[in-house]
Length: 188
Image (cartoon, rainbow, N blue to C red; front, side, top):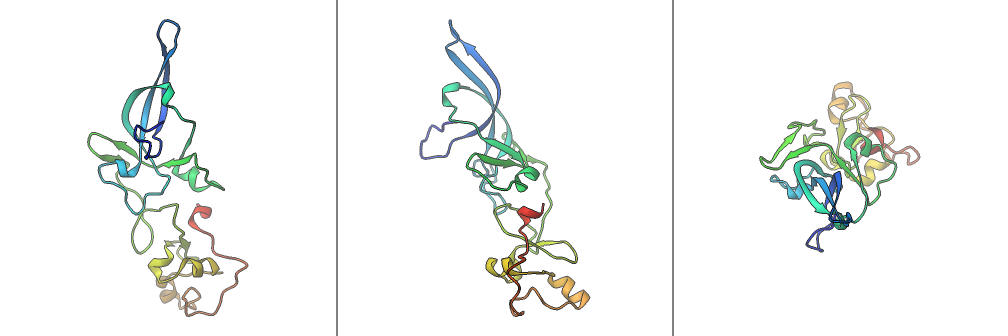
């Protein structure tokens, strides 16, 4: 839906009902349920929020149908992370937002990596082949380029516990580029 301030991106809303008013039904109104972008919420945007993340709110409104700019797709988090490609009209939602209180449902979410942050589908993560935990390359002292070249990855804990070769350290010998570790987006 068109924003009043044209420098801002369009608003995202779910159409709940369409009503025609006026003598000939020329005044078409839509009842919408708003999605909020993270920066529009009380807590603001956090590092784990994806660039295409929106929150389904409890904020309803009635707008002129003329404000509708087009159709977009708001996917569940699970569906979004399985998309082969993300288009401009694709968004995802993993929280409901209570606009009056600033609270979220669910109020807890799984965390990953040494940094204990929720998963951001915009960021590459690699999975330990031993314990199946996920890590951001930067959190384990690795560049994204190095992470993409890995053939195998074992986290520091599993390497220490099992005496595995440090195949994943950047001091290790060059890894095969034919079979790169898949990103979190592809594995979920």
